[in-house]
Image (cartoon, rainbow, N blue to C red; front, top):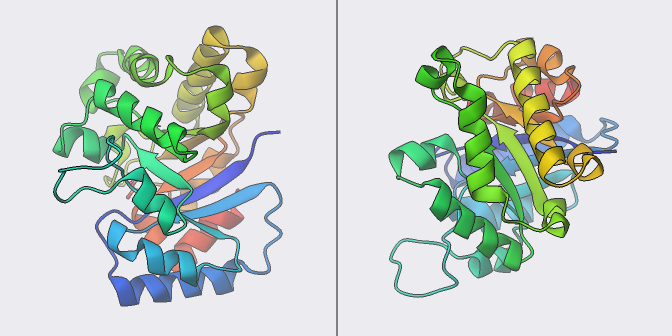
Amino acid sequence: MRTKIVAGNWKMNVNEVESTELIQEIKNSIQNLPLENTRVIVAPSFINLASAVKNADNSKIEVAAQNMHEATSGAFTGEVSADMLKSVGIKTIILGHSERRSLFNEDDELLSKKIDTALANDLEVIFCIGEHLEERKTDNYLLEVGSQIKNSLFHLEAKDWKNIILAYEPVWAIGTGETASPEQAQEMHYFIRNAIAKKYNKELAANVSILYGGSVKPSNAEEIFSQADVDGGLIGGASLKANDFTAIIKAI
Ligand code: 13P
């Protein structure tokens, strides 16, 4: 059975004090939830990762990074390596977020290198994929997401997939308040799982957790999570409020 996951991507929000408070609030509000077969992850900025790992100790909250450099070490001013992340207790990294792709020019080829570096360091990857509005409008959305998966992930061996989580985030739904309908989400998640089954096998595909991201909030989470191939969410704005994030976790 694949794992259900609710992950909060804090993006460039939340300072040290706020991060400590937010983790404490989430800790308190989820401590009595059953959460069987469900993981709760938060991804603060690099600078708050070390303290977040300590603050989340002895709780159901796991801490992930939002990015990582593809090289092992060296002259890359301002960048952060896999080893640095591991050394502060990070086990999971978000890669390929659409903001990294569009604002920082990260393409499929670079992202495939980042994935290889992460996996070589025994890190788990939450890999984001998703189409732009133009592709959605011209009915090219399945092709676009299919090619993102193929270009960045299909060189992997079957054994590598135990460390891959996918997050389908339609770019037009991120931070816009507009969510994919449950049917649109299910169509894409089914397409993704089927593509993985065709390339590898059905059993492997059935074990990959595929999260939905894009304006998930307490009012729409349950409907989206009820879809057969939606295994949880990658939450932006609503993950910054403990109450909203907890309500979304309860909807899983
Ligand atoms: P919002 O939930 O704010 O739309 O952001 C989604 C997202 O980008 C998560 O990675």
